[in-house]
Length: 242
Image (cartoon, rainbow, N blue to C red):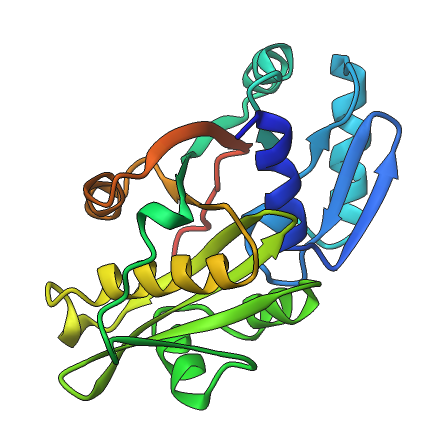
């Protein structure tokens, strides 16, 4: 996958509520859908003066200024650092051919759309609420929920959407009581099988660099790192309790 493909798949498989072009910036209206759909990106060369434009646009939407810094944004990264923006949540993108992973164990996971109630509950328990479910609803084209099962019980859930020949997996969550029993492995393999049925040739996902457990799983499945990016945001100043 090329960097351009990665960003295109991210944009369309997990879409913002609204995209607003302001000068050299793409401003995203997130509506509680997470960082990916709330961060501004530079679509052309920017100067220090341009940063104030992006800040004002995000604040007008009721959002704290947040920037996604991509592979070609070295100068932007320096400008934001000089303005006091902290490097935040570096992300690694993994990918694999679907044919290498599409070997689901029988009855271990199911593809369903729209999400079943139990899937929404698993997400809610993990902090993935209505704002992120709305992102899934907005995604166009082929998409599905993958619901895992272990010991005849729902074990976890993920969302997968296809953008052309690439499928991207988001919001993988495993129930705490069902961890270390192969649930995530089963979900990943069913996601690849579903993607293959949709005509996709590649399955990819993005995970925070700090999530060592998830990264170990993806490496064990033969997935390879194909890209990375990070965010920049201002430090949070909490008001002391009186």
